[in-house]
Length: 116
Length: 115
Image (cartoon, rainbow over all chains, first blue to last red; front, side, top):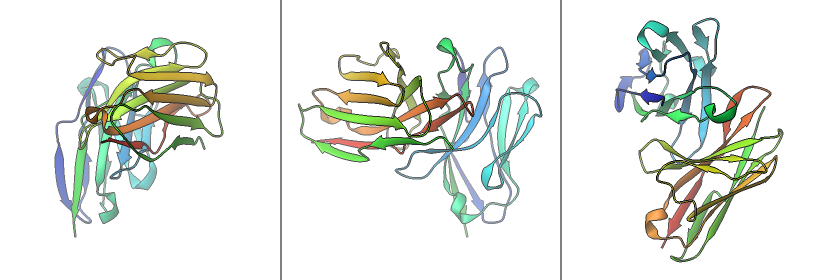
């Protein structure tokens, strides 16, 4: 079964600093990879996704992520963090979109705090 | 874009009563919807996969008689928490797959409090 690991439970950065959130997955083939953001008491908003092709994916709000097959990683990055980026970030993986492969499995999440 | 509406956003119920949560895909047809449960400051735990016109598939450890799922149309799935108890208090989130953008769209969640 696939699994997702987000090693960092909490991260604190200063506003304007760069950010990298780590995500590692466990799955034999190339999975479908996602990053979501959640504000307190809210649902999830998709930041970006990777299915195939260019391994560097651009998302909304200035975020990007790079798929590295050799490291089974899909780390999320942002060059300059804004105070409004403070939230919970979830990495998620699915094996496909049909049959029994479409379950979306989430990592534990990384809580991002931004200092002014 | 794909939009999923989840209702109610908050509900408080008495112990022993049942609560129904609705999840609607507003601008697309969703043959498959998912129900998640999220504990405070925790990740999302998949409870079940809901397929239109068939029985839901529950994850291991999820009581199917406690959490009844119905997906009677291509735009609506419901989760009914039966005989709710305080330990069922949680944040429940639904999501649906859109075949147009191959993405998972999430509802805004339902905060259930059982008193």
